[in-house]
Length: 241
Image (cartoon, rainbow, N blue to C red; front, side):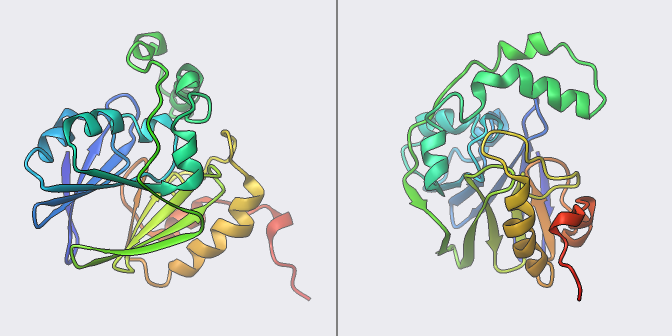
């Protein structure tokens, strides 16, 4: 766990030890806001004495929901928020990709140039499902949390059930839609076309006001630099007259 202090908000980051998937935790007024709960004993300990927990899922892939069932079993005051599709997909071992953990981990470690004994890790990632979430939306959702404005915006490129989170108009939690590496669109429900035609314009517009991006994997960074990592194919570029 490490603590990230922005100007007016304190954010704790927890990382799953199997894949470097990030969970972000904000604690205020004895309430917790958790983004993508991973299976982390440190995370569970950190929310022990909270009065209420709001959870936002950026998408349904197993590494981003690996701690959800445990969290719900530990605390009865958990409210989970996600897109309608995400709520449906977390209840399906194929759509949440937990049935394909070995293939996913092989892809992940090969991309990082790391040789690892994948078989030893799979025993810790049996296929699993989660119950539907408590609050769903289809396009956008805005609400207040402990005097912070929260805006959820649906995205489509990485998966068709993804969302990004804007807090106070300047802190962006991007899930796997935007990271320090090119956005992956080849998984179930992903779409390269929708990333460039729908997600990218939204992210580019947000670059004028977002101060820092907290991605689903890797370290926080600058939105313009993260956008630049993605090399737009010519077919999606606007043709000038």
